Image 1 (cartoon, rainbow, N blue to C red):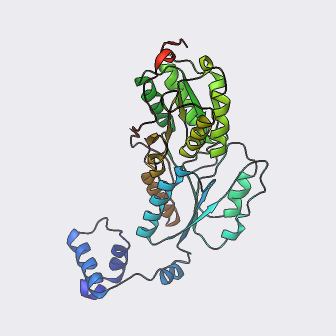
Image 2: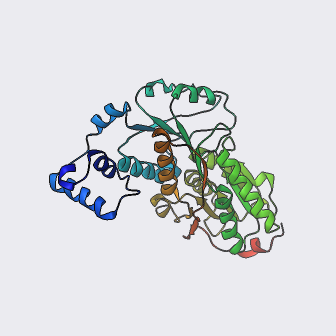
Image 3: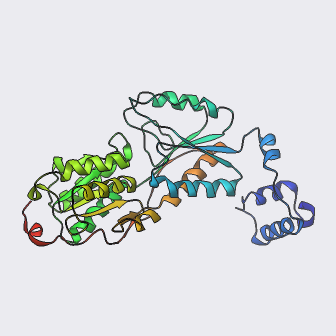
Length: 337
């Protein structure tokens, strides 16, 4: 194939792996055309043996039910396919009441790991990292242990929820936080608090409850916030994750409250599921796929001899407006903070 394309073997190998920097477009086109004519497909097993690698990455997530990882995984998978890597996905639940996860099963099977289960308070976390003994990139979870990480601007994501609700006229806004055991949850809480303060809106402790990024957590947090006299309730809820928002909707139905007539609700994370709820949920669409792309690219670059960095994705989030948010109605809009 290299002979037909008129290039040496190393050039053909690089171009077939999409390493095209420094090559003329006509050279790239000639190699790809020759490969297509011959039906050439790279032998990943032979390449792995030659490089003494497994050509595989692991993505370690805290909860496979969390819609916040759907787009991230898609972005990681796209990059793995482009760079000739296999992707393994594993759930790693962390917490003082949970049994330790044995990561030794990954030993010898992967060249690097994308770590998305970091918490700020689990003493076993460093032990888990030592078990991996491969390059790691933290994705959607910051950590002091991270030399390489790719995260979103979570303060901006949370602030966008407040901006949308405030623009509709809401002043009494509750917050179903993400897990405050994670850097992501803490940064979203900070973004919510700062956005409320910028609009001179009160942040009430009883209206801000940790929902843990789970359905049950969102359900319990919403009951805690809303299970009080009408004048003591917020007129809107900002929820830090879509799974928690599903729990929040369930709790509101149990309380006999109508969305958005009695309370508006929106969440971070866009997914087709948000279109199917009753009513359909307003969401903050964040650049999940780009996050996954960038994290996987960074990890593979490290494996191939590069260096890591700490990156915050600067692509702007946007509100996807649906029927779950509306201006406050009746006397509620006139209640003072």
